[in-house]
Structures are given as C-alpha cells and as structure tokens.
Image (spheres, rainbow, N blue to C red):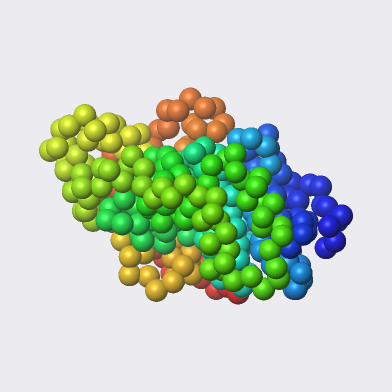
Length: 357
C-alpha cells in the first residue's frame, strides 16, 4: 500500500510514513464492527506484516465518540431470531483475529480514546501498546445482554489484580483510563490533546523499531497515571467477589449493607442471572488457562449456546431494539439457574472451527 492508497469504507487501511494505519470508520455507530470489517482488518494486517517499510501498526477510530462501541449486535440479534449462522461465523473470525493481534510480530499501537466496549476491546486490549486518555470509557457490558465478556475478555479479566476483573466482568461497570491500566487492559494514559503529536511521532519511526523503543516513545507523551477510582476500592471488591458461586457474592454484598455494596447489588440484579453464572465460571476457569487461545476456545463454545438462547435475544431487545431497559430474563433468579443449563455452555463442541495463526 502506498501513502495514497486509501480504502474508503467501513474500515480504512493505509500507510502514513512508517505506520500502517487501521481506522474503524463507522462514526455514526461509534465504529461498531461488522463481519466484513474483521475480514478487511485481517487483510490489512497481511499487507502491513509483509511490507518492510511498515514499522508500526496504529488502530484508531473515526469521529469524536470513541474507538469502538462493540460488535454489530443488531445483526447478530436478527440472525439469532431466524436461527441463522452469523454468530458462528462472526465470532469464529473475530476470535481468530483477536489471537492474531496478540501475537502480531510488529508493534501494534491502539488509541483507546472515548468509548471502547466489547468487540472494540478485542481489537485493542490484546495489542502490544494500549493507549488510553482522559476520555476513555472502557467496558465489557455483555452480561447485561444475556452474554458474557468474550473476545478474550475472560483471559484479560482473570489476569486483573485480585477480584477487580470479576467485579468488572459481572457488573459491566465502565473503567476510566487509569483503571483500565490497573485492570490490565491498557498501558499508558496520554492526554487526548497529545494524541495527534504521538501519532505524528509514530509516523517518523525507523523500520525495525523494537517494542521497547515504541513503549519509551509513548511514555514521553504519557501522564504516568496507573490507577483510578475503582482501584481504591480493591479491598472491598476482593472481599465481595472472592467467591466461586453467584449466590455467595450476592450474600456478601447483602451482609456488607453499605451504600456502595447495595449499589453494586442493584447493578447485579439488572443482569442476566444465567449470564452471570456462566461468566463467573468462565472467569474462574480462565485463571488456570495457559493461553489466550485456550480462553477463546472456551468462549466460542459458550457463545454458540448464547446465540441460541432466549436471554441473548431478550437482552439485545431490551437494550438495543426496543430500548425499554426491562429485560425478562429466563430464568429470572440466580437460584433458578440449574447445573444442566450451565453445562450447555461448556459442551465440547466447536473448537475445530478456530484455526489460530
């Protein structure tokens, strides 16, 4: 790709100096990613990996609102309603791309400015250099859709300190930039006003620049912040979320009875009971996983069951389609989620679909 070659579509890939720029280009949808965009991104990585003049990859989002609000959830909902196969295909190709990003041989810089959720996390938080700003709002809110934190989210959350990852995964709470660093989702806070200067500096680096040199370059623009408001609550969060059963987490919050505990309890009560139980099990299994790929296989199996579930369709309906924010979960209570229901999410199926690089 030359400096002038621009693919003007939902994804723009072009060379700017020594940077291979990948721009998510659906600003009206906060750059929500489609199956075609995953395929285009993969092709762009092929070209940039093979081009010796490309020293660094840069992922960014068009518009002012954020890097990426997640996957094209409406398309998945429509396919799920008619028992289509979009979920099977999209999640397969997306998860393979997530794994590729983690292992990409050249420094991969993600500008995680503004909103970064779901699928956007998968494209950025596995990269080698993750830049957040004072505007960053990062979240894995999938449990509110009858789903679970996927795109390798269980790998990332299970490696957060203490029970911070369990807390973020089950509540879907938004992280600011410093808390994203504390939770292991980002590396450096750069003021949004300095992103253009950092971007310009990246375009001028030499071919063959090392990851350590890119890290040092980014550090020259960074604030040095490493922990936000949620990090200050770590002691309480560890006590509440250290349990392996949702019933015990709920009981711990009820026993505490503080304003913060009751607010957290209210948040959990809005989520899919089945989604929370499945998420907690996935997070606990991820703690002993040997690789991101192992977590992605487990997530893929669980996602296939999610796609077929009433909870997913109902969660998306309430949040995205009708926007009434009143999902009718099935079952409606955590104590009604049976082992047989949960077992379906962990069936030994689908792993052969994922051919990792």
